[in-house]
Image (tube, rainbow, N blue to C red; front, side):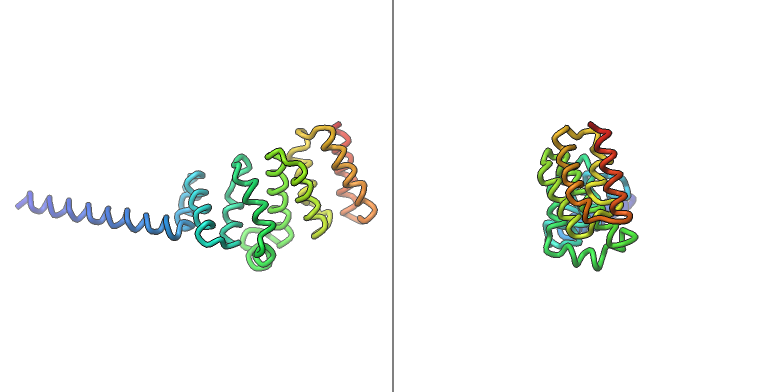
Amino acid sequence: MKKLIGRTIGITLAAVFLFLAVFSGIIVLFCPSVYGRIFSKLGNYSASTWCFEREYKIGKETYDLAVLVLNLEERDSRLNYYSYLLITDAGYEEYILNNSLKYFSSALKAEEYFYSKSAVSKFDGADFTSCVSVCDSFYNKLGYTEFSPIRKLIVLRGESFNLSQITELEQKINLIKGELSGSELSFAESDLIVLNSLK
């Protein structure tokens, strides 16, 4: 009798574990963002970003792409591709309008964050031309803000600039200085001082 009870309990537990494994597998395959959030909270970077990347690849939704970019670390080579894909995505403006306040204090802060992440990752990927292009796009859209990509780039990667890159950024800032006033002009002049100190 005890053997029968033990066998029954063993079969029941095996069935429960099998069900949970199948159920988890289905969620990971068809709704991976759920596990992405769980893994992220547990500190498992590779598993969480795999889930977020899979979620984006399933539906190709801008929101899912933004979540992926938010979770990708600077050292991750995928950031170069996905951050630029986000700021050039057809649904990016709508995402900023409707969802940016979920993660940022304002739409401007979200724009500064995503454009800066793209510019820095382009620089890290040894694509300075595209890096500057991202900075130009932001400036043409939102101006020379306090945390604009060009300023973030100078702060985060200035020590790695070569003389040619410093000169190009100086020329670019000097070219637009005449269009600036107030705090924007102060930011530009401050950046020129930093760039000059890096020579």
